[in-house]
Image: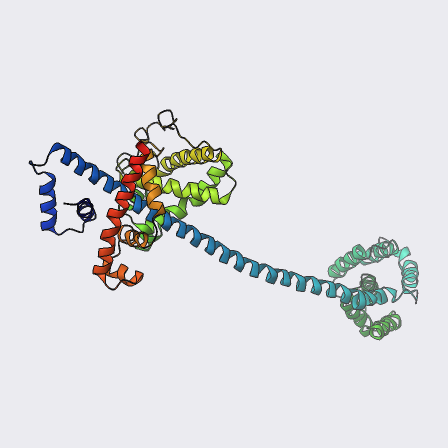
Length: 243
Length: 200
């Protein structure tokens, strides 16, 4: 048997390419008692070498597969990065639009709302209504201090309004109005107190730039035919005119 | 079934996969430990080049496969986790890589310090390739067309001769088989000559 033939046979045996009969024949050859020690050693060495070569070929196959897998992982990563890169500008665009909207909103606030607030805060100031209301009410109620809760509330609210604390003044008035018992038609003092308190509340609302509330309260004052009807109507006209 | 497919394979399953050349699971092992080992090599040995880390990792996987194929590692002999075992292989591969980079071409196999990890069956392992294996690997790695695609396709991809004939443009399975039967003796003779000349 030539070397090439022997190698071919060993290869076929090791890679499972032999039929059962061929395999038995080859194994019989390996165990042949007539084979010299030298030949047997040579054959065994060749078998070992062939095994190593087959393992080395398979090892190369494995490494090529791993290299392909590495390339695949990198490609997947690249694609994922590309996708992420597409998402970022979109996200930035959203941010840009949001920022633009926010700036626009600020401008709207400055151009439209601020003058409104400014105008509203001027209402009444020109007519000096606060001062006159305070003077009138102080004169009317100072002698009655401690007489009832409504009187005390009006005097206290007046003081607070003078110091600029319109929120606290309004709270005191709201509380006093809630505490008032139902008024009968002949209880003139109580009606006056209620009208005064509502009017003061309307003034507080104007000072706090609470447009809707001030209109409601002023309308109430006007409808009650109170002593403040005329001033209340003036204020209502000013508010409507400036809106 | 879904749970089975999505669950992480056990060490024993991976060892079986390496023994039986289950390519899908070997690739899964590769993906599972890639990032961890890249980080480990970078941190421990300061291997900064990604290409170097890839080479080291792939060589470590190949040596793990080889140890399993040669029966040096089995499900029973593994006493620590497969990753611990794998990391110690990677340690040795990295050390060799560093040595090569420092131009220490000749490796003194006899005095080569082999890192043993107690109790994980590393005693029998010798990571430094002997000259004989080096020569075989080098010759096989240099093998080109028409032998390389035929032998790799047959021995690694386990494709039939008919499939290989179709893929590689042979007239038929017999023609491909005939070519393959010429390749193996040719390669063996080249390796034998290289081994002989290395002994001289």
